[in-house]
Image (tube, rainbow over all chains, first blue to last red; front, side):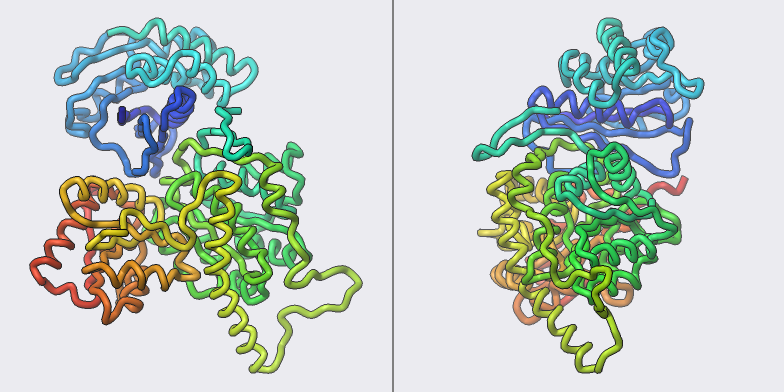
Length: 181
Length: 405
């Protein structure tokens, strides 16, 4: 098994941390994983790409990802800002942070989860922004079969502690249940 | 804490870490006494993490805050003169700003260890990797190693203390890891226990000298010209001995971790190879995958990964280079008016033995995929087999479009 995923998020939404949480969770599954952020001149609000590789064996390559098995979009507005099919030309499964299923052509499957509402419900707000990364990571783990919810929880505990960890775990568990096709 | 497993009774901890955090964990395990650094992207996280460790008491070290990279290396130079085990880290313009102090450290034979998170030199302003920064200090008397992945960056840092402090060597070490590609990429790594590292890496011996308050002592004083040249000769010999020490340390490290890389070079599918690729750094992983795919297509090609460019593994380059039909060197740094930095060195060694072709690619962080390496290697083999002009050192630039809006 060898899979590649791309996360498109806004700077400040936690896309980089989401890919790292997923890499940790996949490692708990006994797999090999690699989380690569793409940093540039990005600032808060800019579109940021993060990459995730998951494999049964050691991953030697470190290049960026161009043709992903799955794509996760943390802000549905990104869909109207860039031409996804031009950016990532191959057939792939999409997960979008959205309260409803987006009307899009040309994807293998489309999943959606209202990660923004989940983040707001669990008071995951930083500097006025809902932080959707743990909810989106959990939805990705389920849809792409990257890791179990138990291992997502363990991975979240590596990155957050105390009350913040509890809020993030609650959001992750809710997203796990709510993600739909 | 993560999955634990054992290697011959040693406990290991599997964690998913970015390269910068992995380096700081290695520095902690080495029980350094003094750290001094100035922040610069993409290195900053290493010294931020070390500052947190010192603040929390997790690491019992003195952390000296300074006004620049020049001062950072000067501070650890002083501390190392006083017998301390020291660490600093930098990138790109920070390394250039240290340049004068680099020579003070190596010419004083002090076993300083520094991480260089490689980054392009501006202008244009660019925070992404190439090897130009680390290679500007090639001739300074520092040992310089390049890591391929996060785990190796960790291992190389620990090994750097053992190598630099060995009384046959007593030279400073640079551990180079590719900016962002390793410094910010999270991968699984197996971390040995403090007890195992303590047994393997005892406290630094008071060599080559230790300055103490109240004891008259002069370092770096003005002397006869002949003494200067004699001291250079000692550094030259120490660098030669370092080749053996690097191989030994890499081999014995296997007893703790089960990991060993082959010393100065790593040989990947070279034994029956007609064509040898040589390169350094993180993209060697992508090159290995390219080689695997080319092997499946019937191309007999292998990789000689240069782990240390100083001291240069001349014997390995001769051994594997001269038994192949032709050698391809892929460089992430260029000597303007000459060619790829590593290609120039390899070509000078193999002149009259094997044709060498140099490729310059990936400057300023331009991404290179396994598929790109397959194209480059195939073109190289075709040119050789068509008897085209791969005579001594042909340098090709691999250019990519994109990012121009």
